[in-house]
Image 1 (cartoon, rainbow, N blue to C red):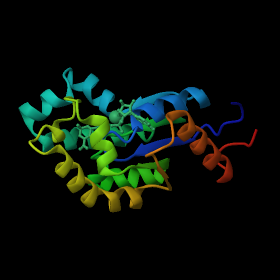
Image 2 (cartoon, rainbow, N blue to C red; image 1 turned 90 degrees about the horizontal axis):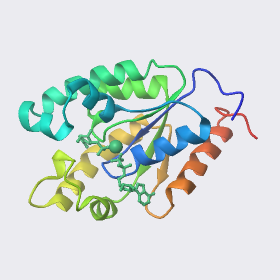
Image 3 (cartoon, helix red, strand yellow; image 1 turned 120 degrees about the vertical axis):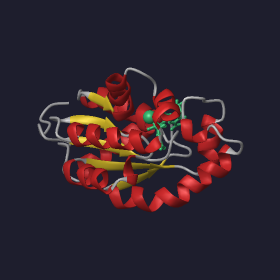
Length: 181
Ligand SMILES: Nc1ncnc2c1ncn2[C@@H]1O[C@H](COP(=O)(O)OP(=O)(O)O)[C@@H](O)[C@H]1O
Ligand SMILES: O=C(O)C1=C[C@@H](OP(=O)(O)O)[C@@H](O)[C@H](O)C1
Ligand SMILES: [Mg+2]
């Protein structure tokens, strides 16, 4: 796609499993923009998995590093940024994401996300006796923060990844952030 604004940054926020990494990567491919996932940037910096780091150092230390990484990534030239589900917990991250990028909230029900992630062991916050109850709790706390941070929201329960990418492109065109083809 030609004629892109060199400052166009698009970020994804939402609960674990909502598709931030998957949809973000596909959108970047479609727009021929660099793709960065804040969790992958953190793992590269730490030299270990997020789950290992959580076990060793705890969540608060992880959030400090996440904040530093998001502060840097949101100053990159045009790119697509997928954040971790808890990035919106810090006010600084919410301000940087909202002020420096076009933010998409991928919204799903806790039940759908539980279904997607029930066999996944890489998300430390969900390694508990009742992951569905945990997901419901995360939804209650974070949904208002995702809404505050985002410029627009997409419901992700039914649409495929390809459809979601098309919906983001359409929204960027309608809001004047992408030239219409
Ligand atoms: N729209 C969708 N429909 C069906 N499955 C999806 C959709 N989006 C993501 N997934 C699947 O859900 C899982 C979690 O996706 P991921 O991109 O890692 O989420 P996040 O980065 O938000 O935690 C992956 O297995 C992915 O293939
Ligand atoms: O919800 C959270 O607090 C987290 C979500 C994870 O990213 P995903 O949303 O991509 O799973 C990762 O950043 C870390 O495990 C913490
Ligand atoms: Mg992810």
